[in-house]
Length: 116
Ligand code: SF4
Ligand code: SF4
Image (cartoon, rainbow, N blue to C red; front, side, top):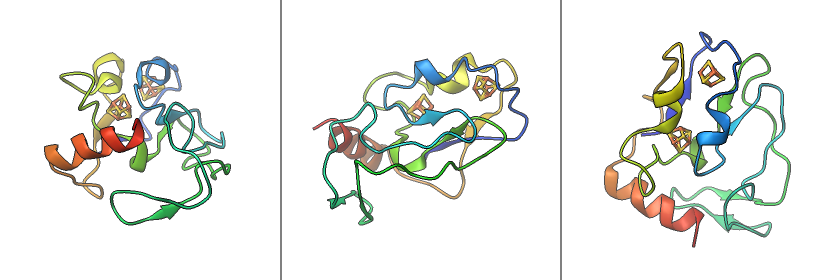
């Protein structure tokens, strides 16, 4: 399951440097799949079957608060015992994203894929 940042976020920025997948961005920032991963090229097929361009700027998911790119979030599996964003967030607004549910095995495969 990916983690999502709710609109309770106070934009403190504490979570961003903690993400091992560079999945967290400041509100209104564009982002790329290749940031902090080994993904490259314009036709990358993700483990979920989505075909993406790793080099292209993606639109921000939120203009108001920090956001997480769900396809880059592994819930920190493969790196840490618990989601690091949730561990440092002072207002507990990094929560499980019910719209992006994945098993531990899927998250491990995703982590390996992002950093292959
Ligand atoms: Fe990044 Fe881990 Fe938070 Fe996902 S749970 S956004 S991988 S810090
Ligand atoms: Fe927002 Fe929490 Fe991240 Fe601070 S640590 S930017 S409050 S999600």
